[in-house]
Amino acid sequence: MAVMQNYAELLFTDAVKAYQEQVGMREKYESIYANRHRGPLDDDTIAFLSGMTSFYIATTGSNGWPYIQHRGGPAGFVKILGPDTIGFADYLGNRQFITRGNLDGSDRVSLFFMDYARRARLKMLGEARMIDAASDPELQDVLAQDGQGPVERLMTIKIVARDWNCPKYILPRYTEEQVAQLIAPRLNELVEENQQLKARVAQLESRQSPETKSE
Image: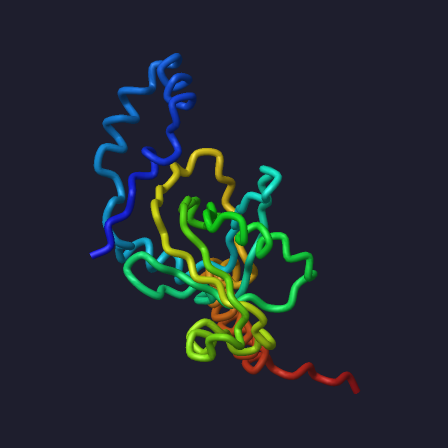
């Protein structure tokens, strides 16, 4: 069974803890993160990742500067490859190769997944591996998405730690598909009501006597 590290143990450095101590939050965080999310990816996390259409991935260059890149695709483009491993196919981009170059120096990545509609966000730390798609046809078949064009690279990420953020300050946003789903019940009611009114008007018109023509 995959045993992940504690998110706080990796990111709460001595400097971070010192600031937490200053504002009286240190003990609270020690209690909150004591045994938080140490096991493999659970069902809720898997369902969340499988429904994502985008996320951000951060790497660090050899000069120490961080870099954030967006990755997106249809729901399901992030694949669950194991109890602690995810992956996705990388398609034609701007060919700057910043993420790939950074990974040559350090395989450590930070991932940020945001679901605006449900006001949920998931942070993950991992160890990434990016390879040319042609070097692993079997993995390419697993990660490729129909209709997205030829796959250039494949990335797999062993998740080392994860944490959920609170929904505070997340303003809800919806895709066209989500909006359509939200208004569908009311829209169907209006369509049905309109049809009933048309039928009623037609019924009333059919009952009216024709006007008598004047001689």
